[in-house]
Image 1 (cartoon, rainbow, N blue to C red):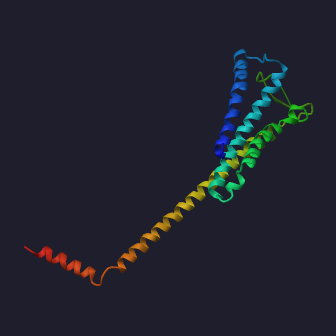
Image 2: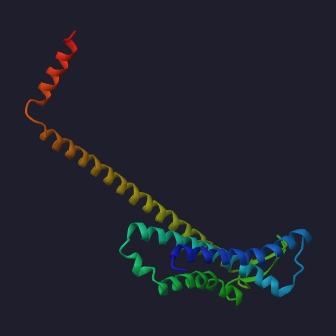
Length: 205
């Protein structure tokens, strides 16, 4: 696939498909039975894939937004930045950052995955020292990407609006220049002759 946007959309589709195939059936089963009955291993994998795939999706949407911003705001930089190698690196980073942030929790170093009795499902729990990475994950995998997306689209809007206003001003300038050139091409006394001809036509019986 040569189109960078298409590559990001395929990556987004893969992460969403994995979420639908793995997390949604387990969540539906837990909701139906009102208890977690799928064992310890799936209780570890369920929140890992839940938060990891969500982060991958958000990072991919951020990648699409940055791609559009570079395409509009820095067109000369676009071919260099979105070559095949760099594009593969960007897609890999969405998965590395998405799941890499959850490795300490998987190892039990910073929080842990387990069954949360209050909701009857598996999620991120505090570790033995009471530490939980939920606030950090919320900031890194949700707040920062969302703010970056808003900033990029605001810049796109500003660039497009500025370009449209400049193009409109240029068109008005060209119209005025063409009008002035047309006026200079008229023969001397053109307006008076036209008015006399009009008056004589109106006065004729």
